Image (cartoon, rainbow, N blue to C red; front, side, top):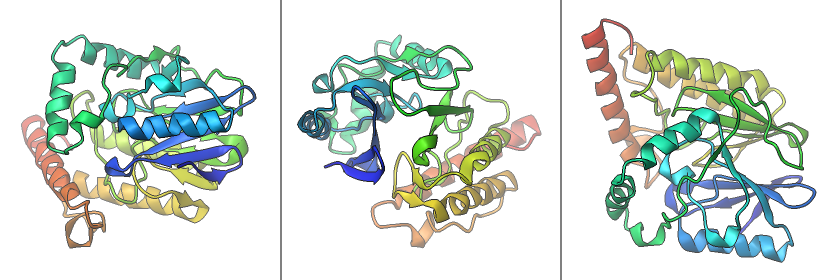
Amino acid sequence: MLKQVAEGVLIHESEFCQSNAVVVQGRAGVLLIDPGVQDHEMACLANDLRELSQPVVAGFSTHPHWDHLLWHAQLGAAPRYGTARCAATVRDQLSDPGAKARITAHLLETGIAEQVPLDLLGLITALPAETAQIPWDGPQVRIIEHQAHAPGHAALFIEERGVLVAGDMLSDVLTPMLDLNGTADPIEDYLAALRLLEGVAGDVDVLVPGHGAIGGADQVHARIDQDRAYVHALRDAHAPSDPRIGPSAKPGWEWVSDVHNGQAQRLARRSERDGTPG
């Protein structure tokens, strides 16, 4: 079911990891950002849009992780965009014939493997490097690209509506998850990304994370500060005081502590090996 969070901006929340699909209404149809995870949910979204007489005219994937690269045939054949680096990463991933099998194997642990359609996975059109806005006939959507959570990760700022779509950042349930594979300084990359988001925070009325609860204007700086404190704790090899991990984690999200522990261990090994922070 679609929920309006701002004028012309609606959200469809998935059952899986509280994933948020974002619909932005334009003149001839909608821009669909990170459309969802399970087959029946995306079909429901497509049906809701049909009832509103709002076809999908463009799509966008905020980053090259499988749960942000899915699509459903009922959503149509609109171009699906991503940053140049995101699209290149997806091409590299899908050039491996075993890529989809590994995603399916991972999903077997979640119990939703049969509900995730992979046939249209990752069919992303690369926007030219340094593209500042999504090319479509609707409200201007600024692309804020950075290297933090994943290669070519992008937050989107719908300026006319005061909506920041943060991708897999600024979540109330997920701690920052750094890209530890493709960057020389993942700590500084993440801090730099937070500074970019901080640059627009004063104009944001609605914050939409990739996973978790929608935030209001009062939540934007608070979540940036919380994420920065967590990354500083990782950098300094301190145990973070963060309500998203440990006994204070929300029910069903206890596994985030395991992700945190694994991330902290990898950063410690990397620092010991290279003699550098993070």
